[in-house]
Image (tube, rainbow, N blue to C red; front, side, top):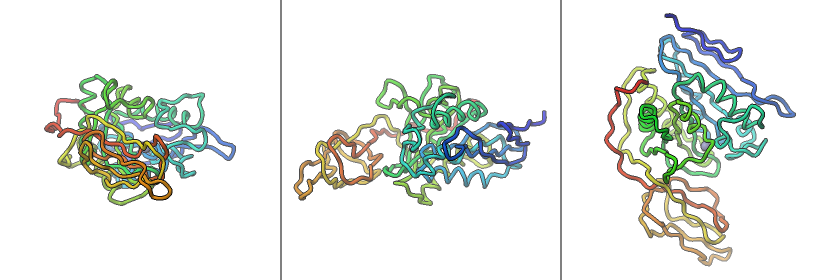
Length: 341
Ligand SMILES: [Zn+2]
């Protein structure tokens, strides 16, 4: 049977073609807010993979990888379809704000699946969940490196309790990450905040993973490469691209997480770096008051791996200064042949 054209509103993409459009989601006083969409509709049948970047508009490496991938893909050689949104959150992209929309004060990654009668962030989520993701079998949300965070790369999937979907999602996360992956699950130390895009997509039966890599509003080519390698690896696993997927090893599994908070305000002088393994009780740094007196010595409450360091150097009482993984060696990896993909 001949493959059909893919349609999203007025965007009609024939098999073997690549097209793009801007989908209006709402309006501001100065004009429309739109989703930039690129569809690469392969000439051969296969999965439909949705790629999203810029959920947080100032996380640049992931969205850049999405752009590069859509430009590289040859629809004639592609098995299946890629529906890519390089930047989901155009208001944040334009305003260069971290995590929160400048229009409605909402975090797009906390309001999924959105609302048709909501504000701009909720309308973006609603458009994604009502018009884009229902077309997809698989999804990768590319994050990492917002203005105020230095981050150690990882990939994650939220377990749903559906064995085949969970095995697929876990495999995709392991093939995406350069080292650490995590399987989030309600009621465990790795509970995901509600309203995240990947968890809501997984609840709807889409194998949807989170890929995180980037640092402090930067656009390091190595971080872009990490995302591109992850996307390529997953697409090879799904049979969309030729070539064998390669697991990047060694891998660690995140099984818990903890934060280190400042008890006092002052200048933070950390003595550990991103990705470092820390021992329980290890000195992590000092907080100085304005004169340089040490008002607090920070110590690790447990053994962990430093996952996020916030870039601000002056902290207030209660501020989180580090977020850490509790890790275990990853279980042996085998490519699951039996699951439909
Ligand atoms: Zn993000």
